[in-house]
Length: 530
Ligand code: C2O
Image (cartoon, rainbow, N blue to C red; front, side, top):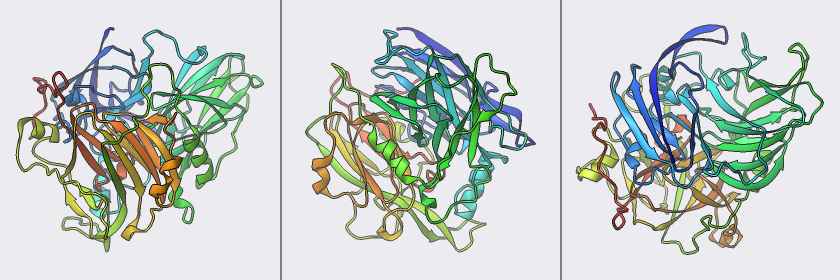
């Protein structure tokens, strides 16, 4: 195992998109940011220099952080932010996982432009599928013409959340259809097979991904292998990744790839997207650049059927020695969550009548402001959080703001029914990708309507997909199960960035196990809060 070292300068960068010049904040002047490539078992050391005006942290999305919870990078959960002109070094070892993950800023909406791929190769160099000829990372993103921190602040002042993005992007570029476009192009050789590592780094939107004239075989999701799943469309929610093999066996030519918005809430009421679709080009070697490109058929952005078919069809690839679903559950809970309207709050100076509030089990998560939850746990700082995160309330009460965690014992098997709800307990009308930090979970089942305990017999306990982010369908549910084998404070939240400041989050406090399964002390350069 090696030590892989990087230095990340977070700073301003001039850029031109959609015919406008602006300054955005990136890592090392790159959009998307640098690709980190490691092998399973390696130790990653990333020196972060914050040369931006924003206090921020970097999160290694999907990394277990076994006994390195201080490096998880969740702002105010596992650390105070790295202040402007301060530095912090993240150090962690990557054990027992391989595939495509990513890293992103975990403060305000900065992750719109501060993100990149984190690729973990198998130690042996061998995949459980035919070795691809080459690999193509595909980062799907969202672009705002305005400064994204201002967009978020404005959304809090109106109480309605941030304005919609101005475009979607593939590897940082919106494509040929956008004004002053800019198009990512990948060159392939006829007859070869490629591994696409697709990451949804978009801030608030699930996406359909297609390549004209080509089909895929999905082989992994969220850095967990799946049984090969053939499909001509990939559906990916913010936070999720999909690894797919694609054979370049179409007639040599130029083909568009398209990433298109999927928004379930729009079934009745489509949003006024300016640019619903980003394009990139797949070009066969030897084909001239002026050859016209074929466009894939675009799905309606309310196509919940196609999304459900993709999300629900994947199964986990079980190899000898892989973890199996634990049969006995120690800690079982229902987490019902969603958005609702609330009165304008003082300080919401642009609020017109009502404001949006999100909650889980009627608790709207409030970030602590003086010390991170992990430091409060480690040092026993009082009055930072309570341990009374509730169960599913029988009666509806107004959402209350609180910093409360659910305490679980080391190695407890935790099962959570994630129930998508809306205003006043009606079923929700919007998908929410729920992401758990620090663990992968078995995704035992998903469905529409309200979860009924009698459906327990339909859950897949044999080969469920293993994920870190599940797109809980609008007005539906998902059941997840994980083993709490890592002491610390682990965030679980909606990966639509718009919903995080509204409170769509909770935290698991996992107690120390027997030595050596203890939370170690914080690193020496651990950021202080101001
Ligand atoms: Cu990728 Cu807490 O997020």
